[in-house]
View (cartoon, rainbow, N blue to C red):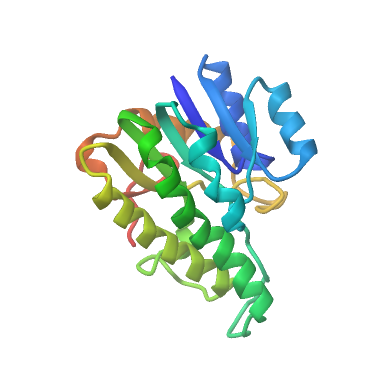
Length: 221
């Protein structure tokens, strides 16, 4: 199996690398800084320097992966931004940082990886239940919520554009004990990633465009 992980410097992305490598997969993984790239190489991955918030950086990705045929692509790069509790307007800088990473990043990456997909490839975007309109019961972190609602729309369009070539889905990874999720979260990264890998291995073409919990439960938009 040939796997590409976008945003693998730590947390969920690094755990995807660890688990797929343990299963014998060939891994290409991206990070922004040298320490993270060295960490990925130590895990046996081919490490590529990539910043999804930079148009210039992402524009070279297709060249770097030319000739590859990935069975699985995971787009994981994400930023939470300000931890608001109500209608607190984000600064322009915070808005740009979160939206560029969480929404524009995948919109830049997807065209770059389209020609490097194996037949029946699976493409996953790590989203969040916080982006769901139907399940929403809180206004906390509304900038992050807006970005994840938007990236679910991006996922749906990618599913339509890549129909017949790849199965495209998005995931709520659970509330995971990572730097972003915090120490009080519900599950560990091992559980989250194992669940998402199981789902990716089992999805069918009819599932493309779906939003899943890490354990395979379908989520409302």
